[in-house]
Image: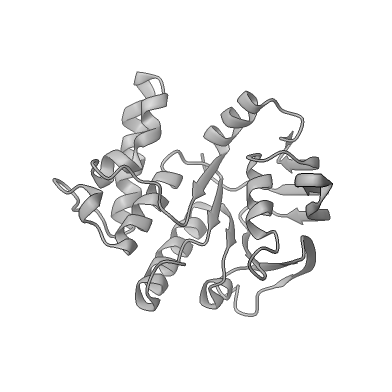
Length: 232
């Protein structure tokens, strides 16, 4: 796939134990290919928003990616939609230590018909090369640095060619220099592919590379503004 997907959110509400409201977003619209940062205090609801956008948690309201409202879909249909449209990047990488970079990045090929596996493996290898991990033969990810592991996780998330990439604190566990290099490579890849990116982060330098910045506080969307340096 090429190009991103637009997203339209309305009346989104996520509740926890005892009916406590964890997140409430009355309206949000993002164009295809937008780079969006989500910031706010710890526990404010940032990751909850990300998981709601992915259809990973129960919620009320509408979350429309393109023409598809994922909220009324069954769990199985949501999973199928994610597999074809949304790549996920997590702070703790979620890699298989005994596998190499290529096998981790192409992991979703195991769930595809045999005829489609070679194409996905080729995309995974291309993403690894673009992220500076082209020469990874013979190494398991157990020997990789934190920055290298996150690059493998990014390659895995983008290997399917999904038009949407959702990232939860992708630079949080990295030193400043490694985080900056990873940010530059990630931004270059998503802009080059027209991918819609939504990233939850406390990293001010990563936020500055976005087009839009959402601020979440006490479970509410309190600000939606252009990033000061997002278009540079």
